[in-house]
View (cartoon, rainbow, N blue to C red):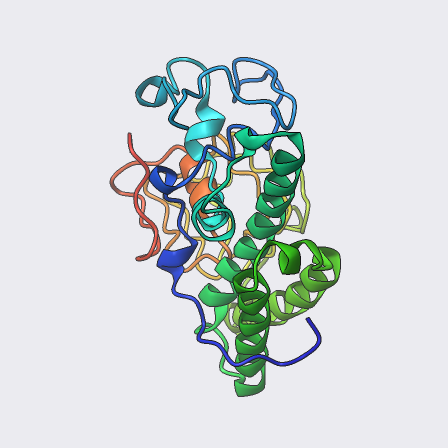
Amino acid sequence: MNEPFSAPVPHPSTLRADCARCTGLCCTALGFSRSVEFATDKPPGVPCAHLDTTFRCSIHSALPRRGYRGCVSFDCFGAGQRVSTTMFPAASWRDGDATARTVFSAFEVVMDLHEMLWHLTRVRTRSHDSDLTDEVDLLCAEISAAVDAGATSVLAVDVTFVRGRVRQVLDTVSAEVRAAYFADGAATDARLVPRADLAGADLRDVWLVGADLRGASLVGADLRRSDLTGCDLLGVDLRGADVRGADLRDALFLTRTQLASASGDRNTRVPVDLEVPPGW
């Protein structure tokens, strides 16, 4: 990961889950606990009871009604099909415990790396600093090269180290973008800080443009008709947040999972490369 690579920046479409080309990795490798998001407990490495012999979910069309809303909002950033069809095209986790451990480990690392690529590709056009854009391109090239090299390369990646480098870039872009919205001295709410507990908060009349909310809990928060332009939403928990009529088009670091876990409508404005979740 220390040598520079020359590779094109991945297109966001390659970082989108394609369940039809996956061997049900999210349904096996990952675990979940019984909650409002999941109807049952499932430990990591154990196939979900609803996964059929063709690696498909037997209750896919009824997941929310059956208590699996977490499955609907989950996104592997394209890691599932990458591992299933590219890294292990002739094998699957059903071929034995040793193979399963390797496949699952590779999936979890690729999922982390693809998520980093997702954020990097989306911030690339947000900065006016050419040096920073070059750093984004370098990181994308390095991460893409590690994934392209196969499972052995992926399993050797120091994910913590790479994430630290990526976070520095994302922090810098976030600060640059958000600063532009406070040039006029706009008032800020003291509650709007990273990792804030804003669960259930009524934020409809709060100035959110350019706010730094990364890691915050907005579970069940009221964001109706709010403008979140330039708002840093990295890692923000939006489960059940009411975003009806909200403007999320230029929010920073918004993901499909965050959108799908929130409650919006056809008046909610979303980024052009993110689809409106079903049911809105």
